[in-house]
Amino acid sequence: MTEVPLRWRDLDSGACSIARTMTVLGEPWTVLVVRDLLHGVRRFDDLVAHLGIARTVLARRLAALAEAGLVETAEYREPGRRTRREYRLTDAGQDLRPVLMALMEYGDRHRADEPPVVVRHEGCGEPVTLVAECAAGHRVGAGDRVRSTPGPGARGPDPG
Picture 1 (cartoon, rainbow, N blue to C red):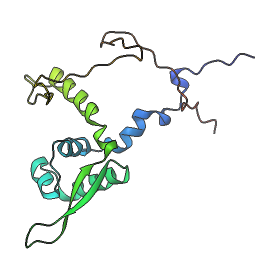
Picture 2: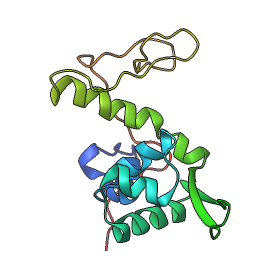
Picture 3: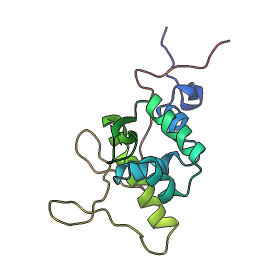
Picture 4: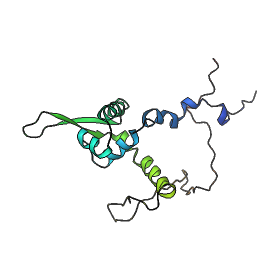
C-alpha cells in the first residue's frame, strides 16, 4: 500500500517550530527585551528605563527567557553597592538576531516612513540585508514560490 503524504493542514500545528518559538517570544515585551539585550542593554534598571516596562513584567519576561535557555545572568557589583545581576543572551538568544532583523526590515518597509535604525556591517560599514537562499545557493525572493514539506519532526493530527 502506498502511503499518502501528509498535507499542511493535516500536520499537528503544535509541533511547528514557529509555534514553539512563539511560546517564548509571543508575550508582549519579550521581543523588545531581546532587542535591547542584543544592543548591550543588560542591567535590569537600564532595561526598565529604556523600555518603559513595569518591573514585574520585565522580571517575568527575563525569567521566561532564562528558563528557555535564551538568557543567562552574571553578577556585578558597583563600589559601595550590593551585588546585582545583569542579563546576557546565550548563543541560542544570539541566534534570534536575524529574526529581529527580519521584523525590523518588515517594519521599515510597511510600518515606518523612514528606517529609524540602519544595521551596518562592522567590517565595511555597508547596510546589512537578510537573504534567503536554498541549499543549492539560489536566492529566494519574496515573490518566489516555495513549498513547505513535512520534515523529520512532523507529526500528524492527534488521533485522540
